Image: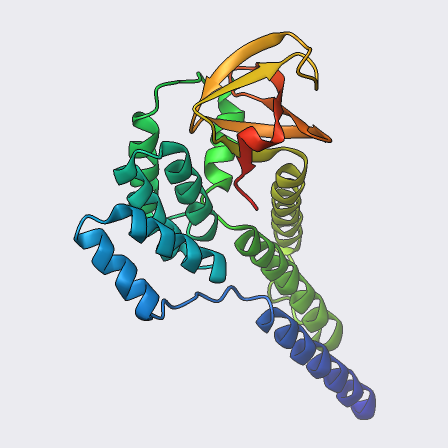
Length: 262
């Protein structure tokens, strides 16, 4: 009996060790900003009013280190100064993918949007708007970590129950843990699937014509201005079909938009 219990404890110990090791590989790690000469030069150019040169350097830095939200944030600010609002909105949106709860990035993104000439009403149901707002506060990595953490807690409780016959986190809380784990997994999957099927993009040209079909011979359905946020739902050769929050849909040239997630 003792040998059997000892064997089970060894198995449980190995399982918990492997579980901890696995979770350690998925914990989001923040990227520290390491100032270098180019970054210092970009900041100096921005302070002296040479926004063109500053934007060029910030763009190069963001391409070298795409996971750094600071470079994208500074690029957005420089583009606002230059009046290139579509580039500014795109940079801020990309920065928010990395640091979704950064108030400065969100405020400056909203300010850049307020300068746009075109406006698009959001006619979606309130719960869709609420869901998008809530999910936009977390990165995909954070959502995956959250889901896997609850799954790990549930698995740990199951191991403890099997080996030690302990009711910690098991008895009455078993169903609650399972429901939370499944809900977290569903939300993470929804966010991942949504970003793959409906890809947020920004209109980059001053005026963009959306047509009824993927051809220059098709009739113009509506027009949009720079900086407008659209959702890319289909792509065929040189054309992409986009959906607006007001329900309108049309085909635009690929060069007229740029995906935020790229």
